[in-house]
Length: 209
Image (cartoon, rainbow, N blue to C red):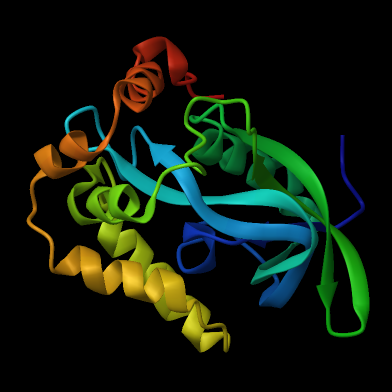
């Protein structure tokens, strides 16, 4: 079955600098009623059981807008790109394929993206600043370091004219911390440790789509 409509994809994390799929163009855009937060415990790409890390999630937040990149995908590549994105993003059950409304220039468009499920154990919004910085400092997984992920994201956001003072401060502080995950584990309580244990259970990670 052929699709006659182009696909629009909104990227707010690693998709901004590493989309790895064919597209016609990409431009800065705003996802309305959502905010980008460092709120996802990464169990595979930027974290592991021994070195939990943090990555971005897109959280529904009335009255806010998250700046990122909008990709236009040719109709001929629509199915292939959706399949690729599902394989890439849905390894974490916290991410849900979602349709968001995006503002680009004077236009409003619907776009595919991946928002967070607040009920998933990988949702890390209630952690304090010291825990967040310790996770950034030592988190590491299959795709590299949590702090490199954050550095890449902040660099891309600065190119888009977006400044995140709190996250910039987190990165600077994390770079001064020891590369030792025991610091993170010493800062979390038993409830958080049990939550992390759920995140890193093999059954929690979805098989490739």
